Image (cartoon, rainbow, N blue to C red):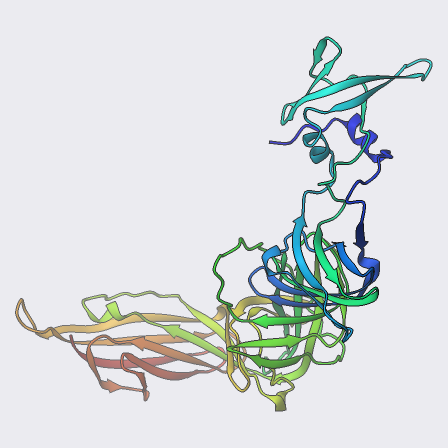
Length: 480
């Protein structure tokens, strides 16, 4: 349900001249005091903020208000330390003020208190003021006592004499510190916060032959933390960090640019415990409620292998299935190796890779996308991009007989299949046929050689001529 905030009240608040009343001896440090800001952002709506400021403090006990911190700060994680080599300031207490100055909060904090109701004469423009007591405020509106009467509509606009001390213009961490010497101190505030997250996106453009690709990597930074970060040094942690509580994760679906990025400095990657830490090569600014794309790296003409895959099912071998399909879908894959000699060689963070290719007119077309996992150096990246249009298959069971097996006997069956692979394109293709066979199996006869790649997997590599077809036939014995 939407909260009721009259337009006249909003206008009154915009022109409100009430003073901000905080502690009389409070020292306020704003973002203008900020010397440096560093962010370590994790995948799961979590970040470590290191905020360095230069603040002038008197000697003794001071109440220091650090304005402009994240609204989703975890205050129990806040640490304040000095960086100037002098004696440390000692923290006596701290509090996090996140109740912000809004029309709703101003009204809520004036329940039971007096306000001024200002009316403007519609013809003369003359203003009259009457004192009222705010009795209640909620989703349905306000309740006011004006003299001897009760009103539920605001007969004019409300004026407040002051802003309550607990309301702040921006989220603020207030620390009471004991400062051993007067002067300008170099302070660093570090804390964990929600509202900051990142994910990687990749854009790959295949050449016409499909054997090379240009790869661009981008990182998408999302800031919903309640404050902005100017010229921040950003590091990114890839991996699932153990946390006691699991905060909600905002979901984003942002399209990455398809064009190959211009040559750029590569990000640095280093091991951190069992995770990877990526450092962006340049500082970046992230506004509040902003999603920002930052280029990570690019690589041109990366060797890529295209593969077609037809995969069967183990239930084919348990009974009679004479017709298993005349136009079976064949999956299309691309794969490349993450190695330095191909312009890569960095640990690749998980993300979505979107593939493109130019058509006969030279226009870039989207041809599919898939998610890649965290990929170490020298490991293979293999992605399914959907089903091939020109490459299809037909499967038929040509024989089935039960050799033995009953209620008390282990079944033994013999079955035979014929697979016809068709290629409607003008290029020769190679199709990988994977057959998951149950139990203890043996290929008795075949017209093409197979490989046993796992305990229950037989694989054939079938070359299909351009505009033609190829036949794979085999007979298998299966002992359950």
